[in-house]
Image 1: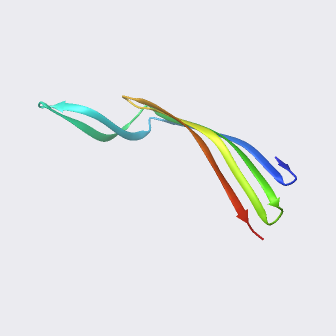
Image 2: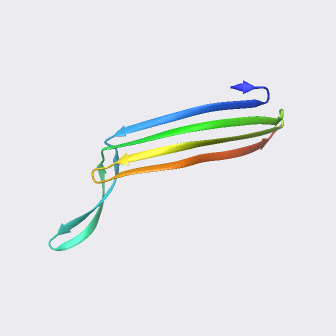
Length: 99
């Protein structure tokens, strides 16, 4: 949406992968010895979700633009022997001088 020197946008994204190939680590006992096995295997699934809001201001039209965005994201990974969920804030800002 644009209103004068202001521009705003809301956006979102969702990704889903079934049976992705990812790193897999697990303990193995063989002939009385125990060791950590590091390999690659198909896991159950992986999905991510992101929401983001963007604002841009032409502080000095055709000369100085200030923009930034802030958002939140979540990643969920389900493996054969684990499930991990990561949440986090997303953000950045830019100042651009042009003519």
